[in-house]
Length: 149
Image (cartoon, rainbow, N blue to C red; front, side):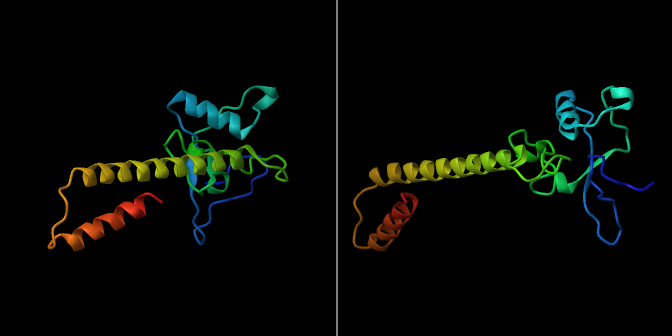
């Protein structure tokens, strides 16, 4: 059987010479399955809701990073780009990607601030450096300056 993408207007097919990833519509949890089905925007016969078959797949092109994620905070938890609509405007997927990048930056900044705070606490509790410890003390102050940027 030929593996092709089930998203409307997507012509991506599996090719052994150029293997790309295809992902099944999740079966569980049901909430994620419903998110995928609503993102795919297909209709079943006679206007009834579309129910994906076992062989239905979504290709890598519909994920921002090119692969699905199982992390609920990641924008690739649900396919979101090139979903069969007009691609000329900012899509929901692009907005979700930008939001996720901002989230990752905030988390990195928070980790850096936490590390700087710990180093500052440690430095306040250290005895004054002696002649032998001067080099280590200077190195320690360099680390503190680096983390406070």
